[in-house]
Length: 313
Image 1 (tube, helix red, strand yellow):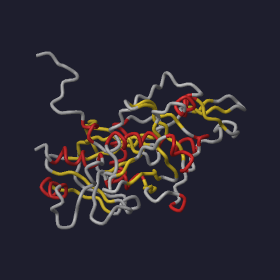
Image 2 (cartoon, one colour):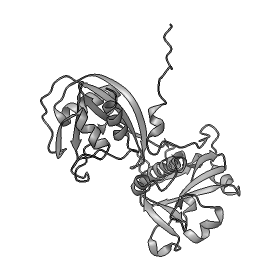
Image 3 (cartoon, helix red, strand yellow):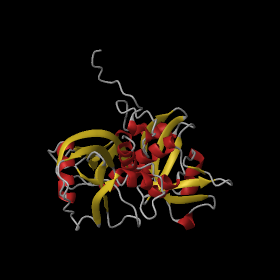
Image 4 (cartoon, helix red, strand yellow):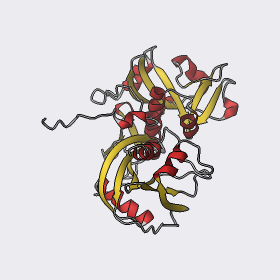
């Protein structure tokens, strides 16, 4: 039988991580400088309202939450129209993200400002809305951090509906960035390496991770970060899945690495702990039946890396 590049026994793993359910048509080739104004003239447009790492949610009597607002809500919620960005078009119509006041005293009773991580951890939004949140949060954070030209230092102006900033002083164009992060699980036949960051919840262990540096391949970043954090040298590296991560605008790139040695030399300036885990113990951590330890929640790409390996035997 001839080799077929795209044959795969399972659905694409990246479909099942948090923040990956975005179905918005970004229309990246058709954006104009008045894209936001045109969207705000369309009564079908829906708004995502954010600020300070939090998103406004409208809570219903049954405890469910809605993340989208209508154009009629803008006046009441103190939005910042000048910094609105067009995310694109969903089946229901255009979607615009914009900064808004998130102080509790400024909000109506049924509306609360919830931090992005809690929205994701508590499952307050459906996968499609959570994916739109990631897009909007990343774009708004990038604009907030790039108000001045990195070349001449003068103020920049938003263009292309939020997908470009232009320095009118020197003419330099600036485009939204995504920071690539390698997250990797070093494995042998029946063991894997997990570590603990100092900010982790008590008892949680996860895959190792680190930023990919300029001029570095994904595979070499996986090898370098694993060696730096654990002292483990890796041979083969294979890609598994990716995850948008709006903290503030990263892309997590998940990989497996083949461990070539067993002696761990953990970087305890970076990690609180790092050690080998047997497959059976990892399965109890995934199932939350371990007496003291657990893995990241199911929406996290680390969870999917760990589970894919643990259940592969």
